[in-house]
Image 1 (cartoon, one colour):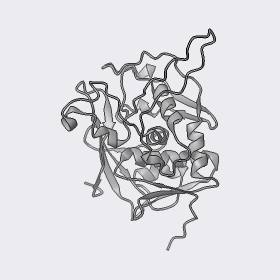
Image 2 (image 1 turned 120 degrees about the vertical axis):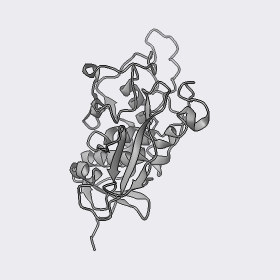
Image 3 (image 1 turned 135 degrees about the vertical axis):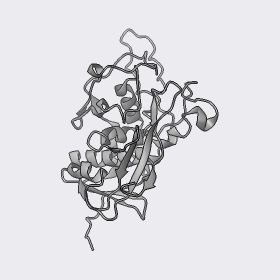
Image 4 (image 1 turned 90 degrees about the vertical axis):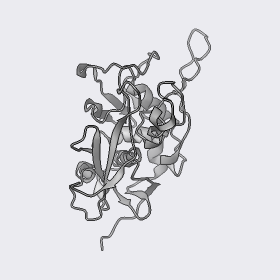
Length: 278
């Protein structure tokens, strides 16, 4: 019987929600940067993700909530249009404090959910700012998300009202009401604003930098694997793609499906268990 270290962080997780799964990878990524050598694993029978490290869940969430980005745009003219930015215009997002981390995985457009003039830095900042560090069940924190408060204008004008911000659509609970075939009308096309899951959205953005799902033979369909062994962040690429040889590993398959009639914007949909090799 394998001896596991005592976990200092435990979160409830639905592994059929790809956003929650990769958010767990992001949680381990942040824990490792705060306490090098952190290890994480899934307890499938308990529906939990556990991390053994030198700190607490609150400390990790506080860092996630307080990140500062190297460059943030002041342009609020963002719209979800139908254009796809050229490869040369794909810019990284750099977290400069309290940890340092460069994010640019969306150069792989197959797992990217946004398009056109949507600004990743504005969404990331809003989701980060909305994180509640005291939440003991963070992956289920649900709320309408607003942009962080803007600085008071120096000329004495009134502070601009905070703008509602829609998520990346990593959490599959958003995908279920994003397409007209699901609810009878397109919430996306009508620009309706509903609750988001900011912890999932931000941590998934972080997690996908190192931990990528494995493409299948079908376009925009991917596999990922749970694992039951203690894994360091450096081993995540192998763990997520089922290369550990863990007999308790479970393969899950999901679609990065279209959420608008123009077939540009996408959303992670619920995953289903599959037999390895299917």
